[in-house]
Length: 100
Image (cartoon, rainbow, N blue to C red):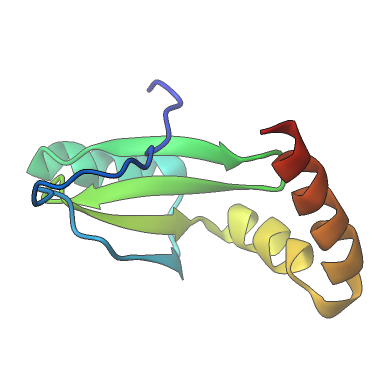
């Protein structure tokens, strides 16, 4: 599958997409998640969040994004946001923001 990510834009018209999402740890691997998405015709995108961690964008009814974390992804995600890593994370976010 292609590695794509959702983009954000301002628009005066009502969006088809739901302005909410959640990151959820699941006991499934990427292939299992992709099979579920294919079964229902829903978009599934493996994504990397700025080199910090990976998630799987799982688009329920192609409208609501759930960021699913496989067991391996969950480990990296939790390490990334652990209290001892927060100063480095803030520094990295600041560097990313200055690039934009």
